[in-house]
Length: 89
Image (cartoon, rainbow, N blue to C red; front, side, top):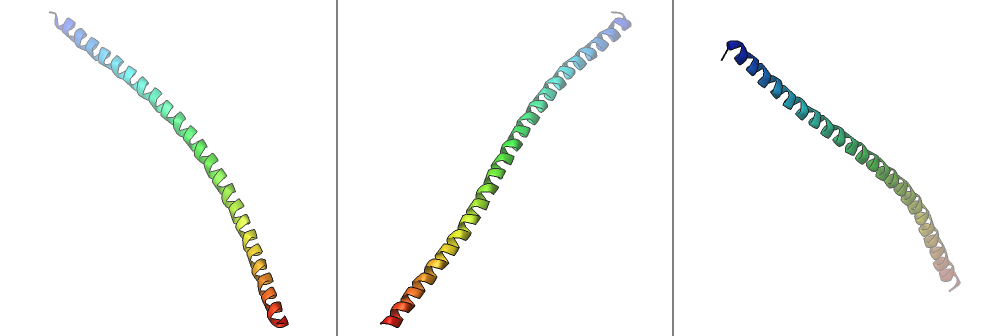
């Protein structure tokens, strides 16, 4: 075999290896793009859940405040009733 043929053969092998590596890199790039899309979708879902949780927490806090006011008013009325009943009897 001619030394030039051997050299050409080695170059062809290396070019073939480069072609395989480039196709592998292209597949990895496609996977990375798919992962990025999924992560963005999960971030959007988490943002929606966070927003709903914040709204529910605010609603609960407002309801809790109203509940405490109603409870205090009930105790005041109860104490006034007991005081009036003890004053009468």
